[in-house]
View 1 (tube, protein in one colour):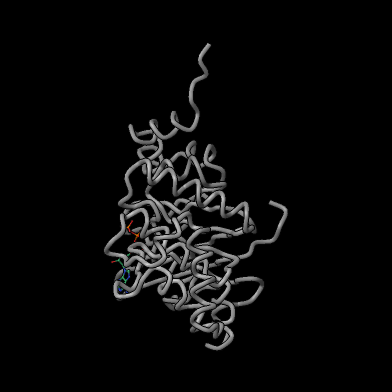
View 2 (spheres, protein in one colour; view 1 turned 180 degrees about the horizontal axis):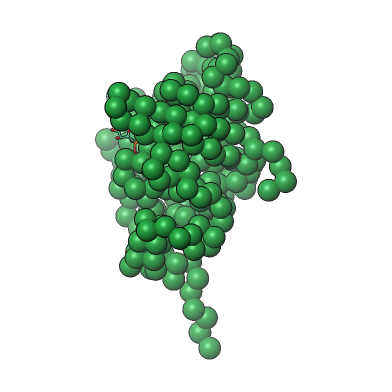
Length: 261
Ligand SMILES: Nc1ncnc2c1ncn2[C@@H]1O[C@H](COP(=O)(O)OP(=O)(O)OP(=O)(O)O)[C@@H](O)[C@H]1O
């Protein structure tokens, strides 16, 4: 990649008491790419995401974002940088007592001081961008399917026009058709809005469909971060089992259908 990275993580360590989750972890996110972050359960994918978005202060290391040393900034300066992030958490985290448009309007009222009618009008645009029908705007999360809730949470992550989107297992809990539609939505949004995307996933189909590069976390570090074909060919037991087990083969075949003669 010729561009310099938007996010540059160097020598990152995250320790919780005796439990060392990351040691000397390096990772880059380049402008405009969709980076898939995979690894066995408990390898620290969510901890890595939380460290970068500022929800967790790492034990050691450097996180450079948009050329600024995130850990060296004051709280005020950090929040200026973090405003350029959109985050979709694993469980969507919508307020259940608010309609979808009220949920999405909230950051617009809180962070940029829009009036409630303006914020809700803009929220309806964001909900449409995330592929929701107009009538969903006045529905409550409990009235919606899992896929629609994910889309609403995505609309909220997009509320402040972020440059980098962080997604923590966006297709978890969706049926295969809903998951495939979500993968395509991420690709469309990346292309339309020029987003860079940091995507934690277990979903092999997402890696094949949506990701430009894949980073594999193992034993506290990034074992490899590269194009999928290069990663899949890396000599490592977990990588082999993950990419070449039955699910990995199925995802590969779905992404590379054999041409009919
Ligand atoms: N706030 C915390 N305090 C103590 N330990 C934590 C904390 N957050 C995470 N951990 C530990 O860090 C390790 C990595 O957790 P993390 O949720 O990042 O894994 P993951 O790779 O995202 O897993 P999964 O694929 O199962 O979601 C786990 O052992 C977890 O218990």
